[in-house]
Length: 205
Image (cartoon, rainbow, N blue to C red; front, side, top):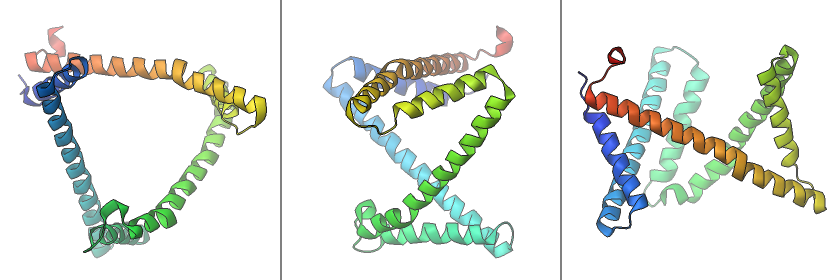
C-alpha cells in the first residue's frame, strides 16, 4: 500500500477551501486564508528554487564549457540583472523603476518577438492541417479563423456587433467547455486521491 499522506493532505485542503466557499464562517475563512497564504509562500519558494537551479546549471555549463555558451551567459546575466535591480539596498522590489525598465526594455520585447514567431509557426501549422484534410484539424483552423475575425478592431456598428458576439462566445460556449474540463479534472483528482488513500490499485477493479 502506498503512503496516502500527500493525497490525504490535498483532499483535506480541498474540502476546507470548498467549505469556505460554500459556508459563511469567520473561523473557517481564517483557516482558508492561512492555507492560501501558505500555498503562495510554497509557490514562491518553488519559483526561487527553480531560478537558482537554472542559474547553477547554466553556470556549470559555462565552467565546464558544454552546451550553448551564449545562451548560458544570457541566462546568468539576465537573472543577475533582475536580482540586483530588485534586491539591491533601497530597492522597492518588483515596483522598483529599474525592474520596470528591464521589463519594458527587454522582457516585453523578447516576449513579443516570441509571440510573433509563434504566429508565423501557427500559420504554417494551419496550412499543413488544411492540406492533410483531417476533419478535426480543419475544424480547429475554421474556429481559429472565426475567432480571429471576431477579435478584429473594427469600428462602428460592425465593431460593436463583433465585440458582443466575441464576448458571448467567450462567456457562454468556451467558458462552458473550460468549466466542464475543470470539473472533470477535479472529479478524476478526487477519485485518484480517494483510491490512493484507501490503497485501491487498478488491479483491484
